[in-house]
Image 1 (cartoon, rainbow, N blue to C red):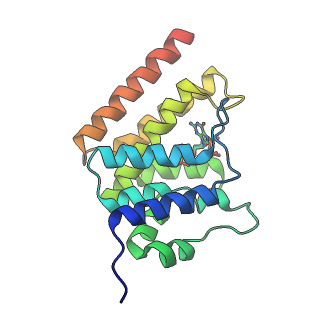
Image 2: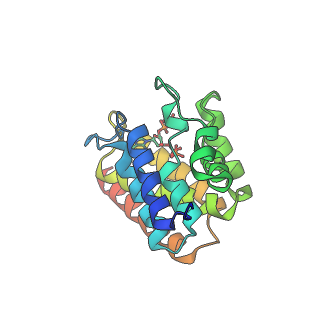
Image 3: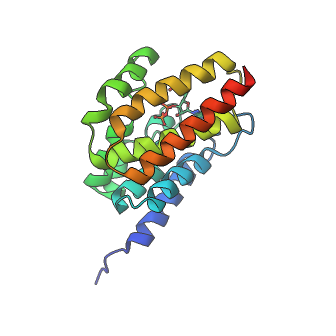
Length: 189
Ligand SMILES: Nc1nc2c(ncn2[C@@H]2O[C@H](COP(=O)(O)OP(=O)(O)O)[C@@H](OP(=O)(O)OP(=O)(O)O)[C@H]2O)c(=O)[nH]1
């Protein structure tokens, strides 16, 4: 008889799935960290701040579809649904940018659509931005000058306006991370 998988087992299975998909991907930062470090950080932020298990599992998988589009065997939402179910796949769909759209449209859509997303997707996206703001100061993407980092910070702040209001502790961490990044960028100017 099949026994239902525990949440812990699903979380670990998602981590293994993400590590395999991102095996050849690195972060854009100077440290060129393995990409999976980012998704583990986002999932840990959510788990530490009381987000539901489906959001933590989706966090591990959140870039597998968007970032495997150029891989020999891209990961699809159907793959995620088959392996982790419809709820997780739906959250991953909500936080995946459509890479076919021009970058300016994708960026504007993130600002415009943030507040319309589900509670799980909003918390996931906020944790994603916290991780990216940390990276902006600790290991900035290669070739990003000061102006580009300031622009990213401002844009992330505008997206976050629509994401906040669900998880006060996560909201506070975003605010603190934003202020720290702003102070460090101001000190460099
Ligand atoms: N800040 C930062 N971003 C990195 C790093 N490595 C990869 N990225 C990805 O690069 C995106 C920011 O680069 P951009 O040039 O602005 O955008 P693009 O890659 O989507 O064209 C982030 O997207 P995003 O829309 O902010 O996040 P997401 O929603 O795609 O996860 C993030 O996914 C890194 O070291 N630092």
